Length: 52
Image (cartoon, rainbow, N blue to C red; front, side):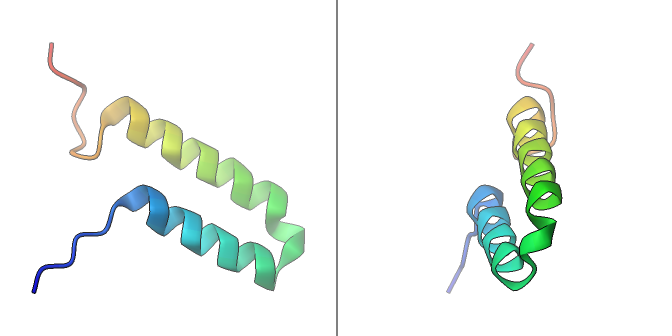
């Protein structure tokens, strides 16, 4: 059985759990989440820069 997890939902889940456990980390977690999602959007899930 293969299980394929997308990185976006996994990061969201971890961020949500951390916010529930330590609410004071909210600003840092949101900032890191946005940076990670932005990098994934720029470089793609495969780690390369688009198709030029």
